[in-house]
Image 1 (tube, rainbow, N blue to C red):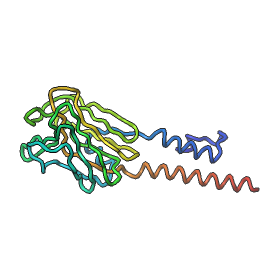
Image 2: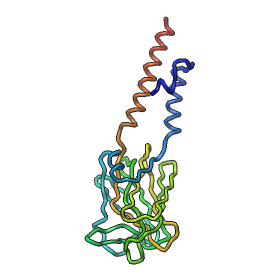
Image 3: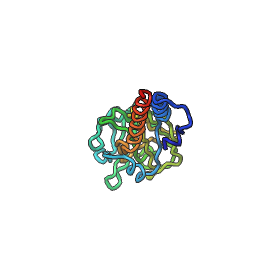
Image 4: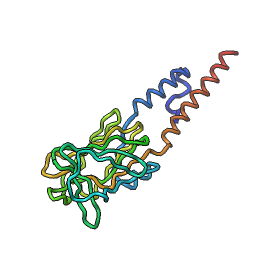
Length: 215
């Protein structure tokens, strides 16, 4: 792959090649969107889940300290959070004021991947259909609209830098943003392995050119 990117006919120096690789890594720092839970899980390692089934249909404070497996995080909503759902013991996390978003943040354990099922609920805490909006922040910002979201609408973000927060809101409709079965994780190490392989090649080129110049 590097041979295709940097043909030998071009007058690259080892330093220029290293700079190009580093600049390329920075330029391509991005958040990847995944809309399938199986695809999301297959591209991460050590996923931790928070089902919210310890909640009940009742109000909660603005800020909750939560855990998804071994990962600690916080959920916040101005005006208070709210437990929703409850059918068959399946509880969800919503808020008390429909116009206020739910902010997931304070991720522990180097979380670079965040996903879950996101949809609207009505004033009684029952699932309904509507549009929810999620924004992932990792130094860059990516916003994704889940139109006509239902309880089966999954969305995941996978970043190459630690996530600072994920914000769940609505389009202003008469419904409340709701989350279920949130999963936190880190990505598969393959992408980092590729970068390290590229940097190793740069080091090898530098040594070869150094020996050649000493002849």
